[in-house]
Length: 133
Image (cartoon, rainbow, N blue to C red; front, side, top):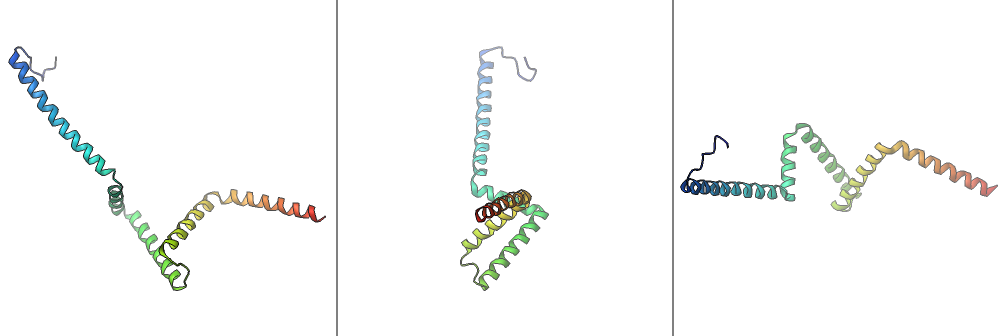
C-alpha cells in the first residue's frame, strides 16, 4: 500500500477516508466542470476569432503583413469607387477573393496550366487546319 495513504484499521478510519475521498471527488468534478466550461467557451466561433486576432496582434511580422494587406485592399476599393469599378463592398470582396485565389493557383500550377493550354491550342489549331484542307 502507498506510504501516503493512511492504513485503515477501524470503521471510523474507513468512514473518514470515504468522507475525504468524497470531498476530493467533488473538488475534482468542480475543476473538471470549470475546465469543460472554459473549453466550450473557447470553441465558440467568436472567441476563436478573438483569440486568433490576439495572437495576430502579438506576431509583429504577421501584424505588419495584415496591415499592409488591409491598406492595399482599402486603396484598391477607394480607387475602384472613384472610377466606378466596384458597385458595392460585397462585389469588391468577391472580386478580391477571386483574384487572390487565381493568383495562388497560377503561382502554384502556372507551368502545368500553360502546358495543358498550349497542348489544347495545338490540337485545336491542327483540327481547324484538317477541316480546312
